[in-house]
Length: 175
Ligand code: ADP
Image (tube, rainbow, N blue to C red; front, side, top):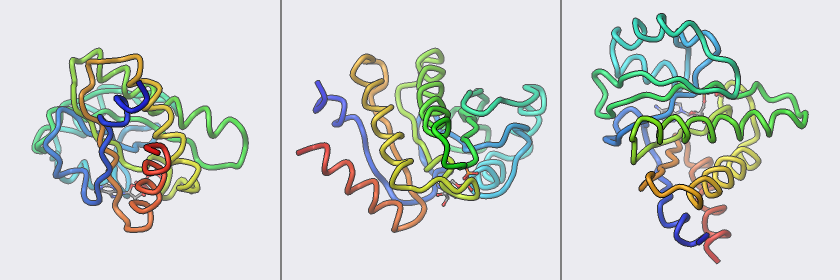
């Protein structure tokens, strides 16, 4: 069961905006009006129609997720989720886990079968990547064990260091 879930997870290094999957996840902020990091990259790649659609949504609380189209990106949809700003408190973990869980639930609701996540909260929001990686992978794995509709989940990391952390953790689970 665990092995079957792990087989649907892939770790890549690169730019999420270039992935041709049903959906890519954006590490947004609560305004959903764009920002730096991966959020800026997604808005640049998708074009101004993305911001237009985001404006109509009217924001998103931390830990929740909202869906839009992908516009000029190869991915059909963008799932916007808002990670916690790292504080070192217990609630960080719960909120970060909710980002993954709510994104995956929203994906299923929209018949999405392939989806990519960046390292949510690991940029300007300051979450230590070793902890964030475990939360990301464990939450996703638990979801995939119960859900058959999602065929592929990609974790795409921008930096070599973060890529190595994810690869190492996946390797430890596969044993
Ligand atoms: P947050 O505010 O949630 O911390 P950031 O965008 O600052 O979000 O960073 C989240 C992670 O996304 C960081 O590890 C950063 O290196 C990575 N990142 C930035 N641009 C891209 C991109 N184009 N594709 C994939 N990951 C990216």
